[in-house]
Image: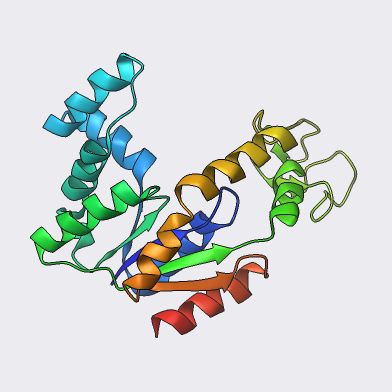
Length: 214
């Protein structure tokens, strides 16, 4: 089973990918992690990507697809894979399709976690975590049982990601809709597109995804 999860930053793609991976025995693949692994392993594509990154340049679509290609050739992807956060553009989608065709593989489903923009801004800007153990909290939805004290480790120090502010979150949403949203039409035309309510509870989102996969 080969899947793509679509959705803006904070939609919960990583969380759902972990659930799918565990239940179906397929590998969750993040392009960021694959890129770092390729650079660390010193593969040909990894060496080329490292040179571009060190020069401050963007890694081109063809090279990113090459890294994905190298990764899905590994034995642990024999049962399938979940692409989380890739492709991001129509160009990447086209290159991915060509690469999979050459390997005799196909995409079984593309699933979008559909979200409400304003609720997403609130969800992301309100989150913070314990500086010591990493336990996650939210200003509105999940505060410590005792104000200012971590439930897990008792620490009184918390931190927020610097980019979890409203201006940055809105900019990330805009970038998503500009570049990635056109993929919805692309995969709809290929009869691969599905969507779930990404604003539902985590277990409910997982149930909706499972209905699509079975």
